[in-house]
Image (cartoon, rainbow, N blue to C red):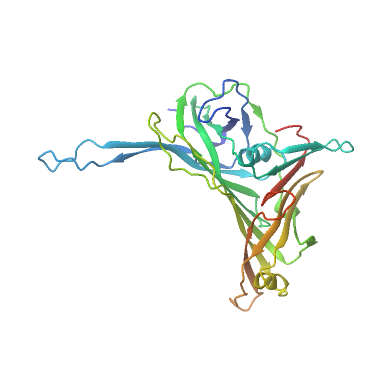
Length: 315
């Protein structure tokens, strides 16, 4: 008996041209990942049917659902394929002096759907999920450890095969970014008293739509995107706390660099919650400050903008 091993598995993603349909022309990307918990499920329903005995009757079946989570390393290259799944295609420009490309991702009215395959080549089994959309993205920047991001996935259906999804799939290059290379600006000035920053994007997807003729979801429509997070700060002054008291909008910019590549997250309009530091012991005092980003007057017309600079010509 051959046991499948996790280190031998692969994750392949492709962009669907029609929702919940495997693309006719495949362009799979082999993605680096730490953990993938995308799976299908079909609930068994206990009927209330009476048959003149205490024995349970045959169960009924509910809808087929597909969903789960994926954990990925944060980098300056491969992550662009996931960002396209979150935001749609970026606006890309080339720097003629460096030959690098800047890809600018911002919130759009439509979100692409993906075809995602879990490959178990050591036992020749391949699980393909269609109609997959990214429901949320979260990451903690500045921590001591590997810099990773978590995404929740919502899908429609699962196809199990003994054939690879795309034998010609190409590998997405990993250009790892690290926590120590992270810096934060508040209102254009670097801050030195922030230890970590938590960021979460909730894409506001509706996962409740099931239609006749589909075993699973018939659609996963978009809703409002919520951008929020928490700044974990050393308590050195009240400047940031005062902005929360006064409900003063702030500008947040988080940047990570790797050689000449970079990942820059911009939230031009954000407000922080009113809070004050707690005294939890004799050591240094810290304070957790929640924030919410929004769009009102930003020239980018987006509550969050992510700029990815690398050598990739197009996503």
